[in-house]
Amino acid sequence: MENSKELALKIAKLLSEKKGNDIIMLDIEHLTVVADYFVIASAKSSTQVKAMGEHVEEKLSEMGLEPVRREGFSDSRWIILDYGDVVVHIFNDEMRMFYCLERLWEDGNNLTRYEE
Image (cartoon, rainbow, N blue to C red):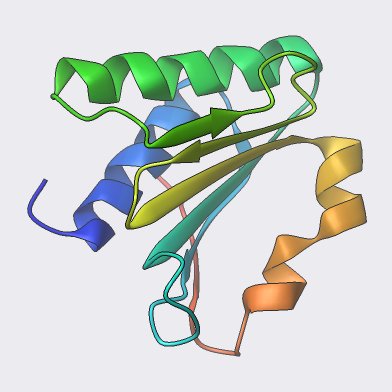
């Protein structure tokens, strides 16, 4: 990947391939040093959350990209895959509504909805 925006788009596409819902990319580079982008998606069940996380990990690994950190696979209600400049959040619907990361990080013009 050439840059973090391209990686975020690739991840959004991979999440979409596993039927992720409400996939968004948040450009947070100007808000924090944590990452350049958050990619956030929802799933209907813990099984789907896990499948989406495994799919992203597998496909990026094939490209030579491994997460710096990975969390949440044990209960699969909220999985985090940290690729340095891009952090992936995959939620079940209930956890997404509860934490609503978009509301915490959106500044009015940094949110992009992924649509194929």
